[in-house]
Length: 247
Length: 86
Image (cartoon, rainbow over all chains, first blue to last red; front, side, top):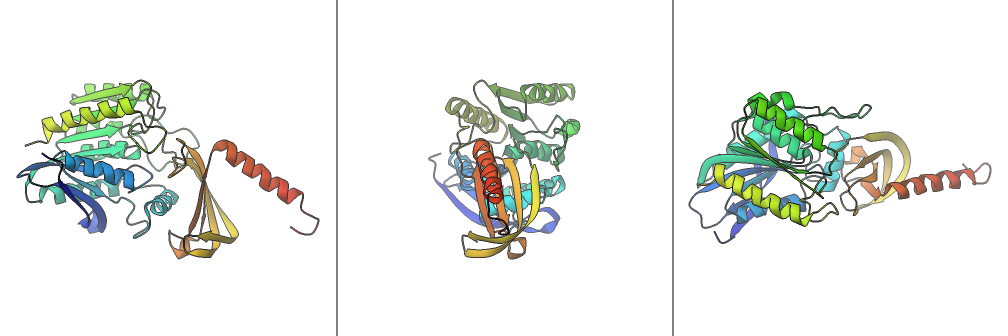
């Protein structure tokens, strides 16, 4: 693996058969590769998440990031699309699952795909990664500081999302959770609760919480970035996906 | 944190966006991750005309302190306007 890759914008078939925009990056010069669906954070289908998508390709995976806000604002800039999606209350859970299913199907059909698909999501995408892994047959899932997998949203907050820990018995694959010990959403107590729920459900998982890190510690272009947590987190991701997606 | 906490109001006026001036019909105010401001959370205001599409938007992302100062400045300016002007 020499980091060579090709990245482009494509159209995939998502929830309800809708054609939606997606960003794909694939390794070059590899006969066979594993696959990753990248779920973008709430600020949208942006440059930072495209960079993460390319990073997976540079490490030997085909990575596909569906634009979850495509229907809300086709052709708009990522920040305008994120604003439009927010005004509608965010991405409905059912639509998210359909779009990830479409992305996974696209990846499985690529020449050279080994048929194994993992999912990773950041921020709101962390919760959505867990949701997808509880709703679809996948080989591995990573939840990066997703809020409201457990825990009830504060009273008066008009969230269109709710807790989904009750789906844990349906988790189809091992789960890696990466969290900041200083985050409040999810709080360390909520992370512990999810850990307990997964253990009770007999689901394979490993959680890591980083001291000195809060929400969004992977975001290199935000003040929340914590280099030590992010570097170790990336290593955990490579080890985890190496176990379940490689080959 | 992804708060989704949003206040929506109707407004009348104009804003200048990436494509020039346009008529404003709506505004949203919310506290969440910024797109650009160097802070974990900001008070964000979007001035919008949804009928003209998602790009008809003037956006600002302010620290909480700045947002409160702005709100006070707006109120103070309107309060001190000469009688009959507003």
